[in-house]
Structures are given as C-alpha cells and as structure tokens.
View 1 (tube, one colour):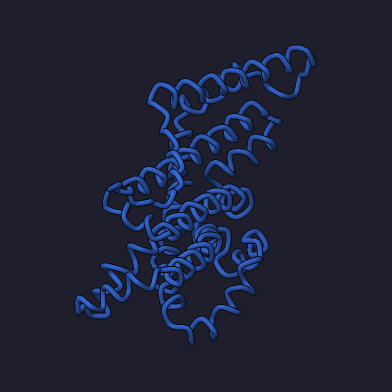
View 2: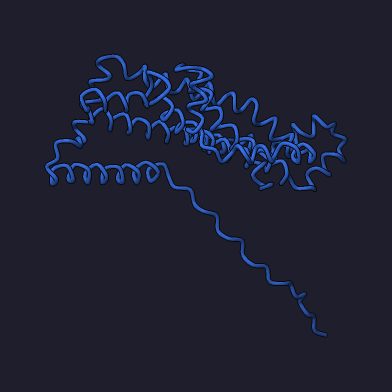
Length: 273
C-alpha cells in the first residue's frame, strides 16, 4: 500500500528585505560624495579663473568671519525659531482638521474643496498679503511658514485616516473601545505612516519658505544673510556659505523626522500602510 504525500501549493518566496547600510557605509559614502563635489568645485574655480564665484576655502573663511563677529549663531537661531513657530501652529491646527476630514465624510465634502483651492497657491504669493497684515515683522514670516506647512499636513492626515484598514476598526469596536479610545489607540497609530510623510514634506516646505520670507519680510536669519551679503559689497563667499548652511540644516531636519519614523512606538502603524 503506497502512501501519497499531500501536495502543497507553491508559495512564492517573500521578497528579500532591503539590507540597512552599516554605520560605516552610511557615513563613508556620503562623505566621499561630498569630497568629490568639493574637489570638482575647487577645480572649476581654478580652471575658470573666476573672480566672482568663491572657492571652498574662501567660503570656509567667510563662515569663520561670521562666527567671529558673533552673528552666525543669531542668524541660524532666528531662522529655526521662525520655522518652529509656524510649523508648530500647522501641527496644532492641521492634524486635528485632517483627522476630522478623514473620518467625517460630510466635513470633507464641505471643506476639502476649499483646501484644494488654496493648496496649490505658493506661500511666496502670500508675501504681499503677509506684509499688509503683519508688516515687516516675524509674524509675517511665521504666517508664511504656517501656510506652507498647513496644507501638506492636513492632506496627509486626511488620507491616512481614510486608508485605515477596516479590520482594524472592527477589531477596536469588538473590544468595546469608545470613540476617543478608537482614535487614539487604533486610527491615529494606523494613519501615522502617512502623517509622518506629510510632516516631513511640510518641514521641508517650511524651511524653504523661511529662507524666501527672510529675503523680503524680515531683517535677520539665513535668508536675510543671503540677500544682505549680495547687496552689501557682493560678498559671494558669504552668500554661498549661507546657502550651504541652509542645505545642511535642511538635511538635519529631514534626518530627524526619519529617525522619529524608526521609533518602536510608531512602527506598528507602518504595517497598515
């Protein structure tokens, strides 16, 4: 008597997970790339014999000059404070509004068209309005940063709530969770991946807006440093130094949000996306 083995269906292999780069690789490769760019920069300045565009060493000396005068830290601080104020206001108002629009369909039908109408308008187009409302003050820059951050946060939060799997909601209701508990323990954690993506995009927009606003609406910050260095003696070494600082700080802010995405407390929500 022969026994037949049960036939099991072929199950496709799971796609291999992307291997995270080691600490050495994560630091070494960007450092090498930056070194190559600096070398190309220096070579282009030497070969072109330009007297306008500064060499890397001249930019470094410009940074030292600003630090020695005691103004560099103040410029960075002012820009970060403005971004922090406008971005925080966008968080305070944007996340609750986005969750409301994502959960209550009637509110989305009423308010979402207005949001979609205002969202494509560049924050820079609001500069004249901001100056009229607040004058050449910090409030004008904070207002522009708020506008630039608010809409990405609202849209990302709304989409995150709308895409929470139905089985998560059913499981929460079966456990007898109240509406507030369902929001705090199920809906928001499940929507968190999209929310964090919106927060990262909004932070990048906020940093772009503050630089542009400082060129027009205030008299301090890194954006002001760019335009002031250009107008006061055509100090392009300081212009490029300010540009590099803007890029480095923007990279640091983006990295900070990505680190938050990796926290254990928010990881389970990524399974829902």
